[in-house]
Length: 237
Image (cartoon, rainbow, N blue to C red; front, side, top):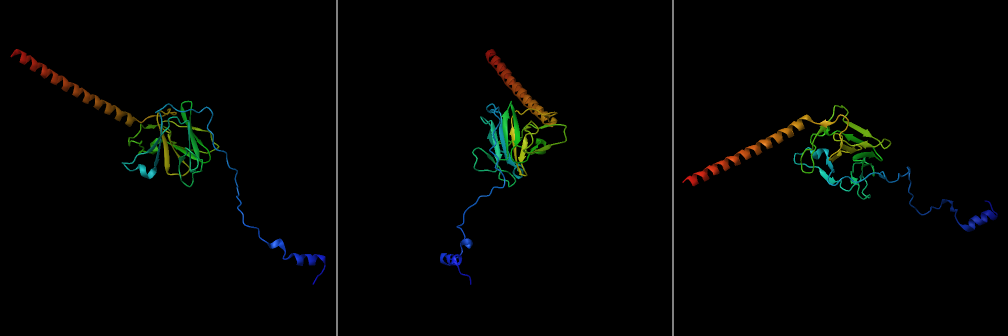
């Protein structure tokens, strides 16, 4: 056994403090730098009132003949953000597990709507891939197509903004089954045109309406003529 000043001090002071545990504390670890909130360009502006509507639907629901798309008027909204966060005011929510808290955004600038992937991939799709597309009233929109065989395009956060057009107006966040689309006077893209069947159908409807109106006018004129002949007969009596 060893004696001496060091042993005496150790004995008098009690057990060694090296094995004592400190009270538990909370430690937050951050493995990635948090990105600052997305900010829209300074030049973006609100669209004309009543011009555009943002629609949303789930792939399984839209196949129901009685289903309609949820809608959000874009009046006085120069930009809209999309993501899974429920803490950001004004964000359009998509709770899919692959959707980031602040995933993507759209903004209106120079009379056009642009789509920007902020923190995750976004896929822009042709409306021709969605034959069951309907607005909030259950009515199908005007359908546009093009000769291009590429009907979808995925953009990443490092990519530039994507202009939305009459045909390419549908988009999804990550691998989500939810779709968003913009209804309104979007510009035509390269080679885009209204589908021939839709155009002929509208011409047929207008023709039928015109024929009904003509039949109605002829019927009214016939009744007036019969009334005039009756009046002349009464005067003759």
